[in-house]
Length: 336
Image 1 (cartoon, helix red, strand yellow):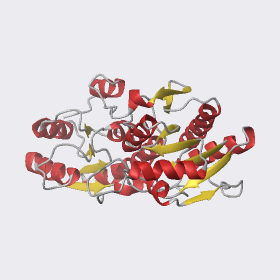
Image 2 (cartoon, one colour):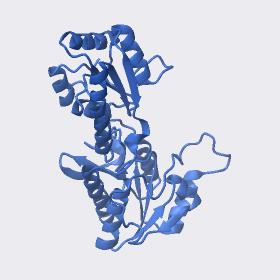
Image 3 (cartoon, rainbow, N blue to C red):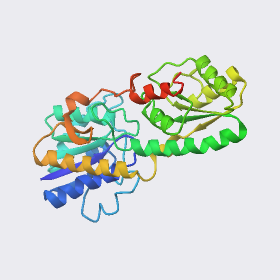
Image 4 (cartoon, rainbow, N blue to C red):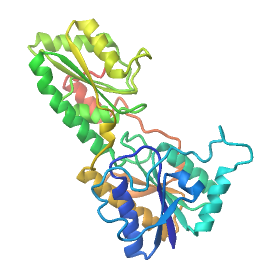
């Protein structure tokens, strides 16, 4: 068999480890050929590919980013496409020209939707969930999340000493447009006093009261962790807005830190390396068994898969009854 592999959407720690997991399993165990497709789905439109060898995938396990490059090309999107240009048909023709028996699509929610549309065309696809936001439905964790949480937690740890020294409120903004998983996990791991996420409505007065209550108890500083997607005035970033509002509510000097793309860069954690390796290997196993149109999942401790039709287009959100939210509230953490 000959399989193709591409990475689409934002970069993420663990992509290269996944590529390695797919390729080494395909080459060494199943005797497959692997074609690397550059720049996501764009590479399938322009035939920008390379044939992988053992040398190609050497040293990938701890390497950040993606050796294949990535793009946000959406081949089924019709807006802005010149008349007469049929991107899905071009993509299908190139897949057949390359002799690919299956395409492994590594990506986030948008990639899962594109993979489902490819499957509906009769193309053989297997997808692997990739996002630091951890918001892909059907899998307990996606690779990249643990690394992002580790980076954010380290940043929160470092802010404690500055906040304590200056008796300030430190507001740190982490990634998460729609889902607050990074803010929740890093906020709890880093000892955040206030954690604000898109899924739970907040009242700035409650936040102010929490900070003032801490002050009365002899705790002159507070750490506030916010997801970038929380509600603001629409003019300021989340951290800037919350810092300004806290200062207005309490009169306590407040400072903001935006972690940004640092969360997405660098070497993956051991957990993400192992998760990527397992998911990549299982993707190849599905292909060898002729099980297409599926996304790899982690459910409990088991690597499995679900039909793309069950996962594409759905978001996994934090709920009020999540055990970390419940435990945080029991311990006095304010969620707004």
